Image 1 (tube, one colour):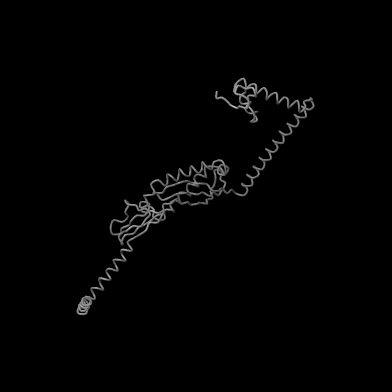
Image 2 (cartoon, rainbow, N blue to C red):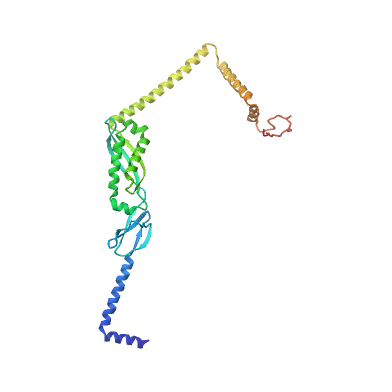
Length: 290
């Protein structure tokens, strides 16, 4: 073994060119190893990617890469986009149908269209959110301007959200963006309008309270009249009981099984609801199917 090592050393010492060749080979292997390591790229969870080949046709629109680690040529680039649902909130001051300035907070939930990120990149690039901003602000101004502040504030909120969604769905079509929903998160009215609404609600509550008070007074007045006529509480109670008996008689005539139901309602769990001398025997509680 030592003789073989000595022979190698003698050959290397004898030919200096071999040293240069070994160094060159080592450098090449090192570069190849570094290139190999750099050729692996990751697509993170919630992302999709596509390959850009500067020397081989540009953007590859046919193949989309989901999350994972991939080997690509070192001169190519893996470009990734977030495809999770994202939300942008727009605070817009707009005029309603009657020219009143109101401030609305509108949330637009969207995502890059899965499988179409290469096309999205070619049409809008990473700044595609600017396209969403412009379209969303236009839709908010357009829709809010069709309604009064009362409708925006209360009764028509869902209708407004639906109209905004229709507009944005149409705008996003063909732009490789998916709209998930639009939500009016808040509506801020001018101070004088907000005070007016508060006063209206307060007056409405006062009116309801006054109406309830009026009904209470009518009941008390009727009670006094009944008392003056000699209709005591016992007589009034008897009238109610008579009405209940009349109703129960009506139920019995319409449905004979009503008698059976009343027996079981009055039963205290002891003996039999049919009495001690029933055909089923004393202490037996059996309800037959009819």
